[in-house]
Image 1 (cartoon, one colour):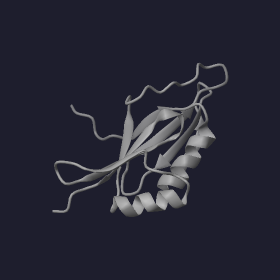
Image 2: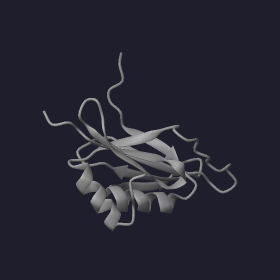
Image 3: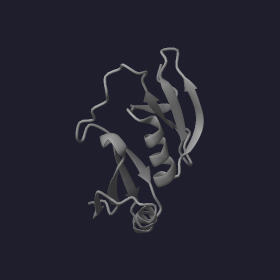
Image 4: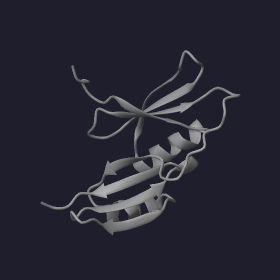
Length: 129
């Protein structure tokens, strides 16, 4: 038997409100639900356009060790229609690409933006067919 489908990806964070604000402002994701887990963690689920999968942000209760994200440990990748236009929109909101835009061997254009706490977001404009 195989798994049915991917439901969500979880990122543990130190400052839940700051991370939610970033995803809402920079990427225009929407909060689909919030609740407290049985272990006392604060959870926020973010809906992504045109996708059933969600991003779960988790802040553990006080006293838990802080999250320390290592460089290049993980990232989320989002498809955008036009990376130059998207980057211009980010700049108006006070965010900048940290890397790129770079054209790949396949003709796609990629760029990165740094999320709070050391997480990285990849933006991909797929090559025209």
